[in-house]
Length: 76
Image (cartoon, rainbow, N blue to C red; front, side, top):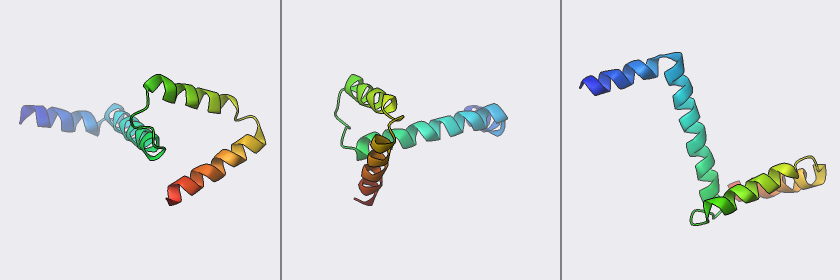
């Protein structure tokens, strides 16, 4: 009971709200990894793919292709 009150008090503060928002974003990003079919992939591989993609974002054509591919993925 006391622990529950402490959790509620922490969530009521701006810092608690920021932590909750951060956790929500991380969960949503993890869902994208699953949606991409990479649930069982090595974490280093996933990070490498993301880093490589991030480095290529200045190429407008690449970016447009990835956005199109991602939108199609959400429709599946």
